Each structure stands twice: as structure tokens, then as C-alpha cells.
Image 1 (cartoon, each protein chain N blue to C red):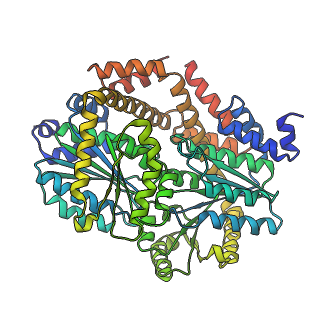
Image 2 (spheres, rainbow over the protein chains, first blue to last red):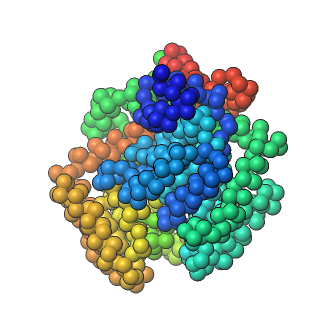
Image 3 (spheres, rainbow over the protein chains, first blue to last red):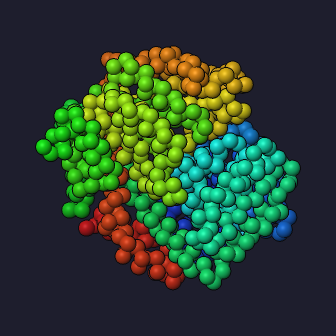
Length: 313
Length: 313
């Protein structure tokens, strides 16, 4: 049996192998993705993002357990920057994963950023598709940090939960970081802490403009994930959002938006790869660096020349 | 007098106009950058990054004042995500800028991320060059957040200061986010808070491996920027780092690394722009979306076809 046949038969090891192949940009990457594409579109992907320390990992663990208890199969993608010092996922995450992997309805995958320079959102989107084709009902995507990558990864998901904590200035920082624009649901975690009411008011204030414009709810749920408080309400809102994007009114628009995203990102990513192998191969690049170092030309004229040459080939 | 002539004569309004032109990708962008390029290379750019709420803005303000007091001219680039709700920089920043702009040796520029999708680091690097060509001695680049964009922007700078606060888990989160790898100098701000000693030990522990390998200092400075504590020491370390990269031993390597960065980023960015205007123009993209929506093809075969077509032109 080939790996793909095993994958179709529901073998989790085959799933892991295919993800690894795609993450490493193996030679069959595009072929596998093209083959799996018609089987995608059934799963819902839910991004869980927010500032460091907001308790996203705990929240994802709890949601996972609730989903599998209700008979759903779950995929988890933990977008986790690799550090050269630790050589991979940090200890906390590893412990956590061992916990969860005891549950065979959950498949967990840690994605490393390792200097992928913008390629991470593409890989995440592809891994979501592989898990979707495998038959997972829900795919939870957890990100670390509040930067552009997180916004990009959120864009790859159907629904985004922004997790905040009742700390002074957190909502303003989240606003600055662009998180308010990508949120479908807000989760104010660690809601037993001081300032919980205030942050909910702040988010309400910020979101009211958007609610009025769109007629959407943009719900805020207060949780204490560690103590299992508020999780049922959060799950209810997640299910409502999933229903919403699957409704007749939104489905076609949502689906077209996802296809647009996939086309743009895939073409950009593949073009960038070709750039590094071809137009700016290490050998050519070294030559250009020496030229400019020695006062001949500049990066802007070079770019124009290289890209114009391309079109004249 | 043309804008460029005024720029050469030291007119700050001309500087602002040229930055706007470049930030908006005006038609003369590459031409201006090519023209200014031979005048660059004198300024030192210093990135100031770290998690939200670490007090980066205050720190930058104080460093600015110290630098101008010692007779230096300073440029500040505040990388500041634009929110559709506030329509630009947030209130705090605006107030602050009014404060600083009273000082005519300081030129402040707020850069908006507005969905630039990876283009921000390129624009930042270009604005650094424009300020450099204008004659600024030091360019401080302040970023918000701890994501890939911040790492990219840091890469565009000569030196990077990572600002942390003595909050539980902050050093681990910074490690996760890849900040430890880009830091030349650490600043533990709000050092009067509890846990200040512990975070310094944690950073020391993490950095000792890197120190041993590289023979470099990677200094840690404890500050209370609001109370002007530790700022002299921080400035001393900044000057030491600037001396280091300008020393005979490091200069050529550092300069080549910067040229490499500029070539890679410029070519990638210009190629991406052409992609959106040409191969994936809105009209063509709409057609591809409809095809895939109706079950014909998939993004991966499409990407292969588009990029291969390109090379056969």
C-alpha cells in the first residue's frame, strides 16, 4: 500500500508522513495537494490567536477534549517558532502534546517557523487542507505572538478566536496589532483577574462600529480555561460561527474568498521559491553583492533589470 | 528647486515628501532610491523591538533626547499598524510625536502596516536609506508586537535592542517568538518591578551558549526609562555595538550582509508587485476563482501552470 492509499484508509502515520513531505517541500508536494484538493472543504478551521501568555494552549487543549467528547475528530496545528537553542518545540508544549496524543481522535502537529519568511501561512493553509482531506471535522490552529504571521495564519482559517487577558492596555495593544480586525470571536481568558469587566467594555466599544456596519455579533466570551469556566459558551459561539459561514447567505462568498487566498498565496510562494533557485541563486547573488559592494550599481536598478529580463526571456 | 534638490539642501519637508512617495510606491520610487544609494552607508540604524507594553515608545523618546543633546541628528521610524477604526496612529503616539517634533534635529515617521503583506520590512529598509542619505546620524526603528514582521524589520537594522519587562514568562515568550536570536542588546525595562533579577538571569542563561560560540558580549541593561534610570549604560552599549560593526574586523562582513538583504528583499518585493499587476491581475484572478469554485482545477496545478508559462515566454 502506498502512503496515499494508507492516508485514504485513515492511517494517522500516513497523515503525518504527508504533512512532513509538504512542510519540507518534498518533490511531490504540489502533486499531493492537487490530488487531495477535491476531498477538501468539509472541515472547519478555527484560528486561536492573541498575545503571549493569554492561555491559548490551555484553551486549545480544553476545546479539543470537548470536541472529541462530542464525537468530532480534531486536528491541531500549533504554529511554534523553532529556536536554535532548544532545537524545536519548547518543553511546555511537548508535555502538553503527550497528554493530548493519548486521545486517538486528535492529531497534533507543531509547525516550525524556522526562517520560512512568509511561507508559514502557506504551509499552515496546506496542512489544514491535508487534515481536511483526511476527514478531520475541526482543525484548531494555535499561533504564538501578535504579528503579521499571526494575521496571515488567521486569514488561512475559516474562523478566528482572539484570546485576550484582563491586563492593562491589552485591548489597545491588540487593536494596534490588528487583532481586532481579524476576530470573529473574542475570548477574555483568566477572567477571574482584576480588570476583566473593563476589557470586555473596551472590546465592546471598539467592536460596536464594526457590528453596526456588518450586522454581525462578534461575541465576547469570558473564560477561565484552567477552571473550565465559560468553555460551553465559547463552544456555542464557535458552532454558531461555523453555521454562519456554512449558511446559504455566506457560503459562496466565503468559499470564493478562501479560493482567492489559496491562489494568491500558492502562486506567490512558488514564485518566490523559483526566485531563490534561479534568478537569485546563491552563485548569482554572490556576484551581485560583490558588484554593489565595490560601488557598481545598486539593489533598485538590479531588481528592475532582473525582473525586466525575466519578461523578455 | 526640485524636491530632490531641496532634499539635498536639508529640507525636512522634502524628506517627508520623498518618504511618502516611496511608501506609496510612487512612479519614481526605484529611480529615487537608486539615485540616493551612493549617499547611504553613514547612518547607523537601531531597531527597538519587544512585546507590547514593554515601554518601547518611552525608551525611544528618551534615547532620542539623549542623542540630540549630544549633537547627533536622529530619525525615528515607528512601525505602527493602521487600524480602520482609528484611521491611523493611535492617540498616545500622536501626543508623543507632538512632543518630539518640537526638536528640529529629530525627524519622526510613522509607518503603517495596512495589509502590506510582507512589504513593510522592505519599505522600512528603504525609509532607513532615505534618512541615511538625508544625513541622519542615527535611525531608531520602533516596532509593535513580536511576530515575523518585527523579525524582518530587525533584520533591516544594523543593531537590534530587545526590550523585555520583568513579567513572569516574558523571557520564554520572547525566546519562542525568536527575539533572542535577533538581539544585539537586551534592555530589561521597568526594572523596579518584581522579577527583574530573575529575568536577567534567564536571559543570561539563554545567551551564554551564543556568547561562547560568538565571543560577543550580548549585554543586558536594566532600565527604568520613565525615571531616567539605566539610560546612560544603555547608550554606552549602543555606541559599543555601533563601533563593533564599523570596526575593520566586522565592517566588510556586515556591509555584505546588508547588501544581500537589500537585493533579496527588493527583488522579491518588485516581483510580487508585478505578479499582482500582471500574472494575477484582478481580472485574471476572478476567472481562476470561478474555475476552481466550479470544480475545474485547483490552486496547485494553476500555480505550476502560471509559473512554468512564465519561464517559457
